[in-house]
Image (cartoon, rainbow, N blue to C red; front, side):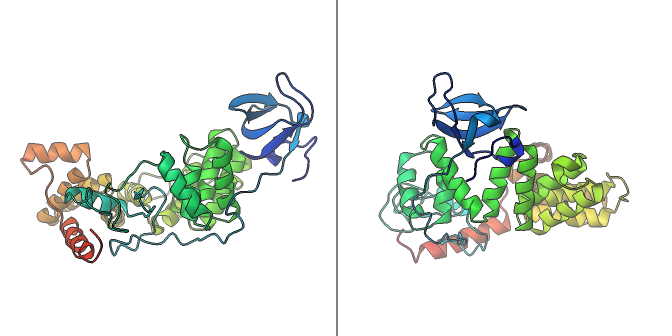
Length: 365
């Protein structure tokens, strides 16, 4: 990287490596760290787990160290859950087995717990005896992930980037930045969020826009909020407007965001926005989309919309039950007052249980 003497802080991003040009109190020339913030006149540079304020002319860029597995081909397809037919792409947040490092989706892990199968043999390798773990802060998980990262597994790089309790901040940053440079939308969104949290707002929003252009639903949702809040054009990179925010919200909904679908339902059902007339039919359709994606408030709103339209009472009751099952406090209260069962079965859950049983019968359980 080139030196940046007399340049502004906008030329440097969060986690850029900087090296001191001259000694500072307690630090020798050449000491290096990573930028973790901007005070308005100086970088907040983290060196040996301590934060120092360094003026732009006191430091220069330092090339990031190489990362094991960085020269391997990064796999951009995370794959799907091996236990079910759900086509949803796996993420780093999904449960894993410490014995083999394999992952299954959250729903399958819940169903295994429900059927008390999680304490039996690992369904993926047949060797482990412990159930799927959701703990991403263990050294055992780090060992598994480092081995997979050397083979170019993007999921492993994501997992290592999130291991605050196990890895140093420097190693976490290297894994995250590798994924950012490779064009992973999720990494760009995470990096952008971190930039915003540490004061690099303009830089963070630019990364959100890049992630949104690659189809990241959460980035679309957050950019819509920036437009609705009238963020300054010099920060957002484009003039803010309600129409542009609505476009981003629609994009997030199409990309599978239940929160975006619910927000659109609120906007259209009650006409709660400038230049947007109320349209209960469209609003109900968005509520239904959110409900089908297991959004608790969306289920409750759909039940209420069906009731107000004098629709099918049985369907309204079904979505009310679903909202209660998902933990919505208002729905739970209404169910208790009406004497309904607190956790009534849901047809989709029953079907998933049966599908899982059939799949497990062919695996080493």
